[in-house]
Image 1: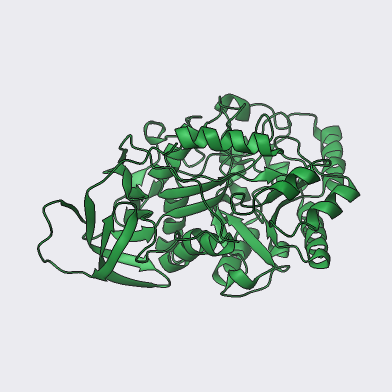
Image 2 (image 1 turned 60 degrees about the vertical axis):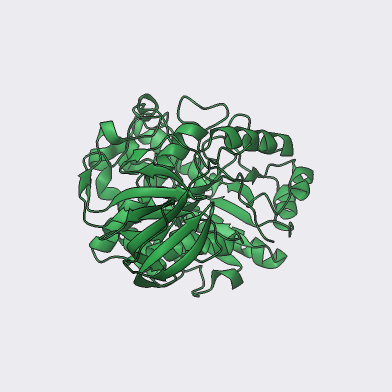
Length: 453
């Protein structure tokens, strides 16, 4: 069931359109769930039944497509759920999400996958899609998955939240032979991590300083696993997505290119790795404990360079909420992950203000490329005939992240106290204004994403 409501025709007038590598002033007309016209800005009369949005001074972008979130439903809804986290996403300009399988129960069967879609059709504010997870024993489920409805197989080549590590050689070989779906890998070498964990426990006990996290889940653990995944993919001819890259060395495994549709190996960078470095552990502690970890400033700069040089193809969030109580536990008990999806766009636009990225590049990596890489039809671009998934941003409207304006169910953000110079003003999903004038409208417009493979 889809909650989309009817809207009158809408005209977004005099916006600075940032789309397909350029910027220009334009008017965008919407009828129903579609963009029906993209035309030069003008001040002419409009029909009485057309609602006009004056976008003077605002940027108009395609809606963000986040290919990597953990919304926690079912089974972990004390942290977040589809309703709360999709609403937070809408407030951040995200119009579509792809959610990971490490929920309770894990999404490793088609029945569990189907149940998630039923939940999202009722609860989500925005467009939705769900990965199916690979295990040591579910190859038949993976082969039966519909490539038009499932974005990819998620494979943990290193344990993370949810303990979905695939370790059997036969299972790994079978998963990498799948041709109908891409394989998206969390790459960290479990043997290296276990050895490092044992050494640090012996030296420091259970409550060690979180700044040791990048030493325990070391760069060697990431590079070893990513290298192994690429070698498997190349042998088998599998399309591989390397998720949340965190080291300078891993960027050297990637191939540059402006057209990600022809790449076999896709690199994903996450906003927290592009924003934080290890100097933040002193203040943030476990709040910035992610797998893989936040690392040195040189790693952060290498990742940004890889984004600029088209080695990294997608910018996503790995949005993964936990309660503050959980994050305040001693290091080895505190879960990894943090909430990001409400703030991902303004984070990346802040890097534009700093001169580290450009708005055109942000749109390419967060809107265009996810649509291209996953073959999502009629989304990810501002084009006539495409779905009206849009976001209006004021690039000069400073605001500060505070507890009272955080929409995550967990109620916190590692960005609290940060002032951003850009603000999301309006988010439109399938022609429906779900976020407007800085607040949720209470309307929903969810559609299941379709992959044209």
